[in-house]
Every structure is written in structure tokens, then in C-alpha cells.
Image 1 (spheres, rainbow, N blue to C red):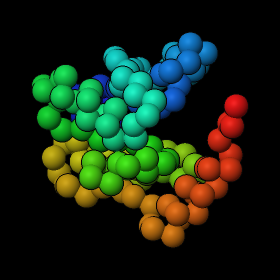
Image 2 (cartoon, rainbow, N blue to C red):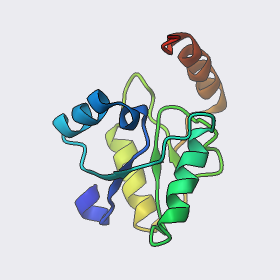
Image 3 (cartoon, helix red, strand yellow):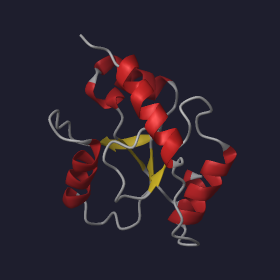
Image 4 (cartoon, rainbow, N blue to C red):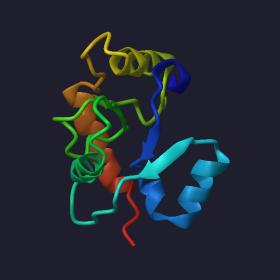
Length: 126
């Protein structure tokens, strides 16, 4: 998808806040060029928007995230946390980044609610 769209990856996952996570991203071949700032008391959308404000050259972007951490106003492509990124999501992101469509791919509201509630119970409480 990256070669097809000319896109570059900016890491916004929690992996970016942990040296082990950054190592894992590199180990698994995530070709990121930068990371979003860590704003612990802010939703992910604020972190993304802060990065974008510092990089006005980024005019078309897509967010791939299994959670919807206040990302409703942004172009979110939301895979299931159980299936991960599917070929359909890859194709949807590529079409979006190439300007062929403005459609995003969010999970339906019931699925999103259930996964968000489940995520609350699965988060590390330490």
C-alpha cells in the first residue's frame, strides 16, 4: 500500500511511548518515519492533530486504529482487534489516500461500543 500511494507511516500507537514498543515496531518492519507526540492527558485525536499542525505538508492522511479514541472527526479505518488489518482495509486506505474516495471504514456503533468496553477491562491498570 505504501508504494502504491506514496504514503509514509507516522506511529501513533502506544508502542511509540515505550522503548520496547519502538524496538518491536522496528523488528516487525513497521516503516515509520516519525511518531506522534505523547500527550498523556489528551485523547489520541489531539496527538494526531498536534503532529499534523507541525507538518502542514501532510494534506491527505488516514488513521488505522482498532480503537476510536476520539477519532470520529478524522479519516479512521478501524480494523477489528480480532482480525487485524484485512485486505479490504488495505484497499480502502489505498483508495482513500489516492483520492479515489472519501469513504472511511469504521466499525458499526454496536461493535465499537462493545470493543471499547472490552478494552477498558483489558488495559493495564498499573
